[in-house]
Amino acid sequence: MDNRRDFIKKTTLASTGVVVGASAFSAKSYGNIIGANDRVILGSIGVRGRGSNLLENFSEMYNDGVHIKTVCDVDSAVLGDNVKMAAKNQKGNKPGTEEDMRRVFEDKEIDAVVVAVPNHWHALATIWACQAGKHVYVEKPSSHNVWEGRKMVEAARKYNRVVQVGFQNRSISNVMQAMDFLHRGGIGEVFLSRGNCFKPRDSFGISPDSVSPSTLNYDLWLGPATYRPYNEKKGHYNWHWHWDTGNGDTGNQGPHQFDIARWGLNKKVHPVKVQSMGGIFGFTPQECSQETPNTQTSVFEYEDGKILEFETRGRYTNHEANLGIKIGNMFYGTEGWMEVNGSTWKAYRGKETEPFAGSEMAGSAAVGGDTSFLTAPDSKGHYGNFIDGVRSGSHHVLNCDIETGHMSTVLPLIANIAYRVGETLKFNGEFEKFINNEEADLMLTRKYRYPYIVPENV
Image 1 (tube, rainbow, N blue to C red):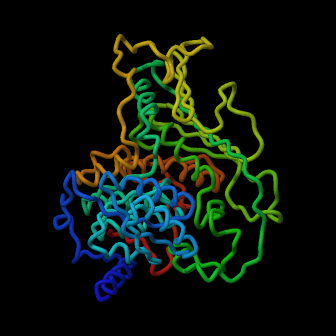
Image 2 (spheres, rainbow, N blue to C red; image 1 turned 45 degrees about the vertical axis):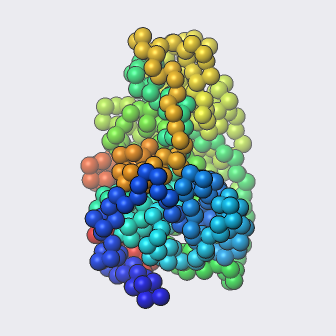
């Protein structure tokens, strides 16, 4: 009990810039302590919706030496069924439960945590975990704002922790193959990259503020967000559509396609310019409390003039052109174009209407006589890749290290800022600040609610 109190005391001190658990945990003491064949002990934090999916996937790796020791959620209503599911997958080995993630971080037997909480919690949960010596798998987007995303990178490096972001496409063999094809010049030089998120969603309505359910620790659920009375239309899942807790579909489904779009352009720097326009269509504020746009078009320009476009459609729509793509990517090069639709891809030469290469085409054309890309790379999947990273103790093993995840997450975040400010914005990628726009700069971070404060000095 004293250890738990000590840890919670240290996490509170973090709000003033003091490192969580610095005296108890260090990169040296938590160095490469996990061997290649050793069991990896996990804590699963957030198990509603996506978190439940992740719990199922990781608990199914029990025979591969992965063990879920603890399941944590601020809403006890979701714990029972998830614990039963994990226990079944772990041959009767039943996880314990916690309400407060800090109790998971204080457990020295736990090697790593899986974080699938609302977006506004991603950064602080990851930083606390790193400070406590845990490796982290964190869902996308990596952060709720740009500033705290950079702090996540700093924490991962400072404490030598392995932090994987949940951009699963990075570990899908056919998508890896498609990116290899692009980077080898399969359609010439790629100058335009496009991502789509066409996901029609109806109004979820409005409701008056009320008392939170007895099963929910509402203070912990709010965490870093500004206090507001409980409202069921702003809670579970619907938090995506309110700025204090979510980032809209551009920052919900969108990050997956943003990541592929940036990957295909082979960009390891931020864009220098962004503009974004849109709105809420199909229902009024009197009919729905949604704040984020359901229709949005964003355009980014890089220093070399290359363009990344992204479109979110939240109402009724056709598919993209004749491709059948509602959620996917297109790339346009000097010699042709390519589509990536889920885990399949096709490439078209010039004005031809039939593909000349693709994931489902035997005998696809080689690039410059090189046929090595034609075999999709082996992949253990995103979860297996994370476990390999934990066992090795090296972030270089990861397919989507926190730095990579942050670079892709910045795109929807600054698109939303451009939308909210209503201006075309110039961005200084080196300092991750806008140029001559104080209003936009204020949105790069937030006012954190005590004691849930992301520290300046992680």
